[in-house]
Length: 232
Image (tube, rainbow, N blue to C red; front, side):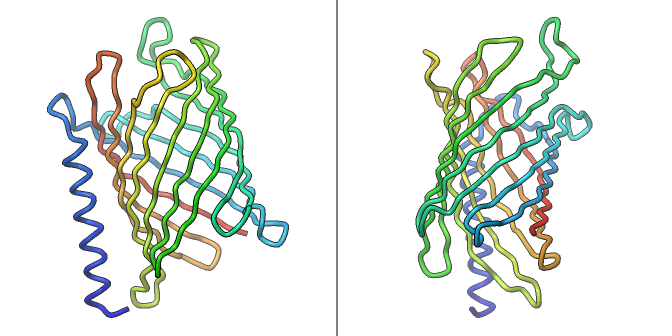
């Protein structure tokens, strides 16, 4: 692919990101800035049909000054066929509370989940739609179910000697099976992944997180995130 086409793809990524930011922006107390750091280790077995992964994620809010969230995630993903991956796992979440008697304390969430991912390709474009069902168990409030769908569009680019993969993504969150079924969160993002070595990959992204509060108003946060993935 020529240099002009590479530039057009990158410009397109930027325009899509600006479109998402416009669509999901609200005129309230928006503008919160957060920093998210994710690391993962992955190994493929059974002739690369089965992937085992361990992920850790850490988040800082309040303009990036306050550590408020971390999770550990152990997952399995199996390549069912050309179009579908299926899997599941378990996530342990700790999040800092700012309410009532739990104010200033990290609250625990146990989260087993199931995943089914649709994979499509058109030319060099790769599209995925990940469906995720989570059972959320808490000791301090009622348990609940949540459905998440994330679509991602990627396009590989080789810049000099570096393999890169710009992408745009959007993920929607629904609470379900609890009597209060509702769309209550959206995450629109754009970023770029690149190879550091054969077995180490990195990613940097911007994400606009929109969350519906109990008052019915939407609150936006701007996230700068990085990911580091080691594969075996």
